[in-house]
Length: 237
Image (cartoon, rainbow, N blue to C red; front, side):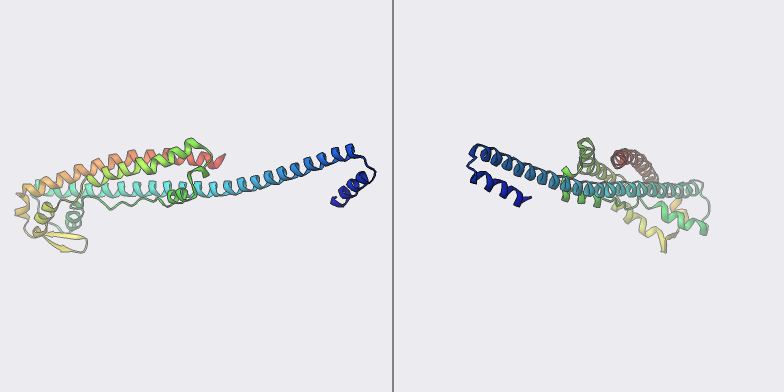
């Protein structure tokens, strides 16, 4: 093709057909420009395609984060219900001054646990930040994801950590009352526990705190599910 253009150009110059050569030269320039534009367009399309692959990877990882977090929250709520069940059993025994039985040892242990240590996944969001927020085309979805991890999650986690935080004076009071075994507590003196208003009061306080945690975690699950659905909608498009 290039040789053909050269031959045409040489022939026009030889025949001194300047006007035709001028038009030919313009045409050749136009063809070169068109070629460059096509090459740029192909390159842009290739880059766009690569970005869409990256976008899908980010969305998949973000979705996995939310799914893992929902599972963690649901598991934590289940544990909190178990702790409260043990608290009710212990309080019922003490309120009615019932004798100790070996089956109560695990409940005395679980009743004293204020809450579990909850860890939520953010690896997908860290990947998103590293790739750049522009990788997700849909801006409303991008804003929702950023707002969740940069604002909603930190605020929620602050509230979570404040509820039922271990209270050192109660722990100090609690320790001498029991013989500690593996995942069980045996009261040293049941008669003393029947009358220990401080211990009974904190058992009830921990129960109320767990109820609060169950409530705020349940609401947070809904928020996780809402943003997760936005991500799934993007993946389905």
